[in-house]
Length: 468
Image (cartoon, rainbow, N blue to C red; front, side, top):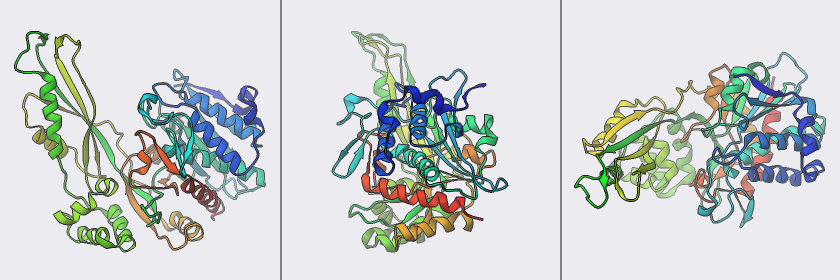
């Protein structure tokens, strides 16, 4: 695809920007204004526009002092709402590979009628920020953009060039901007290290931080379809077999589906680090599972946490369902989508076989449609990668250990790794067991987590940029 390129993006959009965006003060207020505009610009594939948001971010960065000539907006041909923004802060050493901050700006769809609050209004209540995308991942996006403005306005001259890429399409539906940039603007986004979403840390109910986590691996995903068909007919002459009823029973049978615990180097390191920090019954269960992965009592304790359960095994759940064609007709077809998340290296065939066995109905057709891209192996967590995180953690979160972990979801990291850019998931944003109810109703994140994460990532990018 041929891009539409706005080489000096800010010059093209600043004239149309709101007056408030042209005169924001520096500091916390400017950062909060950036985050507010990001959340309140709908970027869902159903009703939103990524291009509108990157134009507003470029305008806000320019108004805050960032050079317009170092801002570039790319809109893939044929995808006018799938815009992406790349910003560049030149370093002193042209031979040193850059540091790249990568963040997706698109969000999962949100229906106002389902939410307690307007999903596209940033609302602060009881120390929490609410809004679609506030946790996934517009808080981190705002931190990335804020970093670039702060560094420039401080007169900071890093040894290595610092880059920012805000992309569309990670959640699906739009053209994937990370992949598009990797194929069409590879030299512009080239970097020796890139950071994106993932990792951060779990926030206990008591507010304690058990560990600072770095994404060392991520789950892959695959979709399966359950489908039942029939001849249909008038609803006044019902047949004994009904595709919707059969499908409903098949979906209900999936409740018995439970996959065994799978330990690997990544989740083993995580639970080894957490066990002494968590303590009590949960810490003891972690130690037991590390020694005996299938211990039923220990797994029952850990499964109380949706996060721990997902880290330890394959999971499969129904996410979409459809059926019928008229209110006065017997259904001719009913279909459900089953979304599975597998630890890296887990084969697909046994997962499909387990679904078929749980459904236990030959009339229900099970079709595997792996949706996730084949993922390149995770970039290794070398001492050069970990040392800056450990040093900044010691300053910002003293006494909290740093540990690798296996993320329960997928990110755009693999798209950059595939073209030779080492990419890691790290946010410094701590979330509770529900991960801020990402993709769900009333998505949220603690104000304190965002502000602490902002300070952490500001220092961390500098540490990488000055690293020899």
